[in-house]
Image (tube, rainbow, N blue to C red; front, side, top):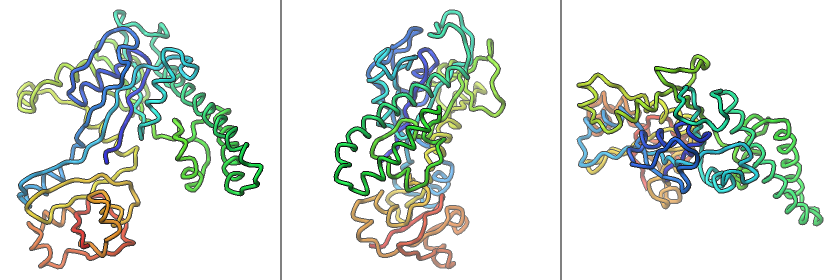
Length: 344
């Protein structure tokens, strides 16, 4: 299972250019709104030097990195939650994603139309936020109405959920995203089924220009997407020869971290060295289920070593000989960088 990130933003903010640069997929890009109607989907490899080093040591027949799916969603505008600019269709596409990557325009260009007529990154971020909040309020009210019909039975779980939705609606009404409302882990789990848009992690990436920059806060995630598009078709040797460097890896890793994902590896045999994506805080059996659904049920134990220890040992057999392999049970919480051999 790969995780998906929906790329959103106002029209002409650079969403499709960002998608094209990340995924290397050819798509239509134009300086007018709603070029993207059906979402483009692309798979992007997570940059991982650790996997490369593990492969050098293990010398497998195949090396398989972990991936994240990116979805290019058409530009949102004011009133999207009411259906403006095909907004309902686009908001429904966001609902299917695990995280939101908001492309924010931070460059001036007379030839590229801005739907709000002026460049103002903070205002644009607020527009997107309000649209997502308004859609979540609509969802919360709709779900509440449905539950109220069933609440006459005095079902404690239904009443509990209604109270939770009331709390959420109050926070949304105050202009807070669900991630900004004080909710317990249990409460967040309780609303997972409703796929609220503002319950998803959101990353802002500012599309800048070297010629006509717009001032933004220091420390913000920035990228010159025009430059990235120009070098996207170059091979790595060509980039080195020209002295060019892509900054897309930092965006990919920012999405990965926002989703609270970690990476573990399987590399005990010669067949394949592989990276796997896992939610932080997961147990060893849950990690096993990523490889095969039966692994979680049939899990007995696993041998675990941190990737840098495996590199130091030189191979799996030597690590075992040195006593560096740790045998763990069902309660073991997988750590980022673990190399695991499952026993079933």
